[in-house]
Length: 415
Image (cartoon, rainbow, N blue to C red; front, top):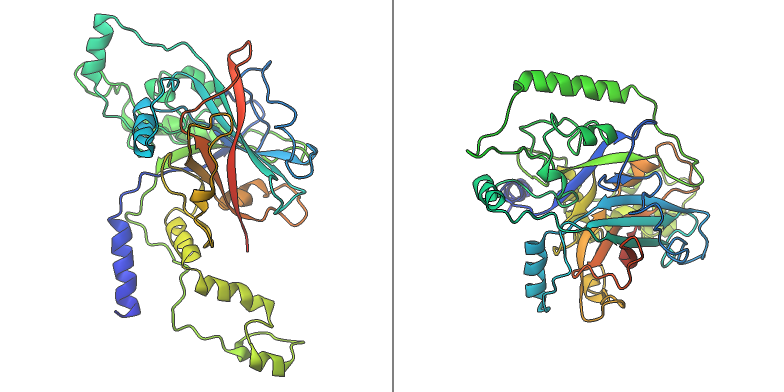
């Protein structure tokens, strides 16, 4: 098969591929008068705890390597409630005994921190899972059940924001407009593929649409413009990164033609095309790639099919800062000698359970967070993988019905 035929086959294969992955992208910088709450998902800034009187222990809020908190900064806060049916299916596949502690009405948040002074050191990146128990908001009346049947379940589930899907009409959700004027979708468009943006249905299954589409879009555009004109919220750079809200959409490979970074297999490196000032020509002749560090990364790229796949898939949606796929498989940044997933330990606080892959942080996040923040050398990770207890178990809740535990992190560093 020629290179052209191979490329065409690969593109068609991606275009027909279905993905269960949700991607988070940067929506807007947090402004000075924005009031965030635990149902928001964002990068940078400072953590919002499930209760102002309930925060994790000091031990969890320090770098696991240097044991200090001076340079321990929030990378991500993700509101991630669970869907009971999805969790049940995953537990069955894992051969686990199902438990009834997974409540979709509970507030569940994942916090990811990094120590900017301990690059590449063990436990310098940590994940905290927080849960706040809430009373199930279930109406068992006959009329409520009838309404539920009428409405059906044809809307898409938002992996970070199950609660918002129940009340996400931008014309009605005034509370959300106060914290994030664009909701989870920066444009609040009815025709958006954003699973966070679902409209309420009436008893006949028709969308409630009181405002003409063009007028709604004009209003949304004006609201966005007004919000963008406000001053960004500022943080002490030594304590926090710049703060951005995220929105989520389904991963798609359709109608996109990215410039894949995969290089031709017949690529040859001509020493005359390289600036090799100061290099001994005799050494260069013996091993032209090894002696020049500028060609070492190129050599690794050509040899690592895993890295090539990572680049190719990301190229379809280059602005992604987060991939969410509970119970799925991570997109590895580079090849590993051992099966990385097989090294994930069962949670010590719930040893009869298992941890599953939930999400991963993507290198585009570094570009956003370091845009105005000075960090010597910069962050060096390729991707950060988060694995969580599928049973969502919390060993101890406090008086506010809040509990926190540490989950498993695996980091693939930039080579």
